[in-house]
Image 1 (cartoon, rainbow, N blue to C red):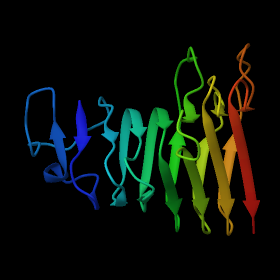
Image 2 (image 1 turned 135 degrees about the vertical axis):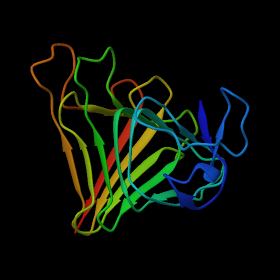
Image 3 (image 1 turned 120 degrees about the horizontal axis):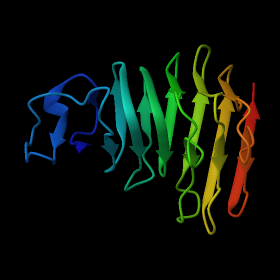
Image 4 (image 1 turned 45 degrees about the vertical axis):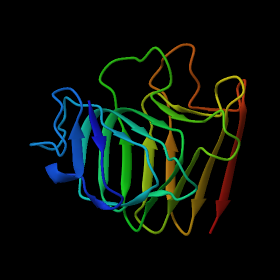
Length: 178
């Protein structure tokens, strides 16, 4: 289990991570394609590109995690303020059908879970198996798309899931400007 240990840094820099599985702080290697790292803490600016099995992004404050690089993952859970801007991309892509939506934006703390896509070239793409926003009972989630950002959702003939589930049993919102 890898955990982000600094405010701002680079996804590929081992010193920016802890490896809780083997008790390294800092980690001797950065997480790779077989790992599911987590971001918690107070937010910051994240650079670099990476591919992971899973990704959890939360925050202990109102300060967002601002991604400036590209991340590809099989599943992403967003429980805190998160931004992909200025050409950054989050691509949620699975080879097999999931048991739940592979992109989830929601938290039991009102207003905490938000995903913002802003700026030309910035993309959030969960076009294989969809996403849910505020999809759990008592959860709230918000997706904001600004200034030429793009969000894509879809499903590849998978029964039981829609392309985008908004507030299925929780509260979800989408805001689009420019």
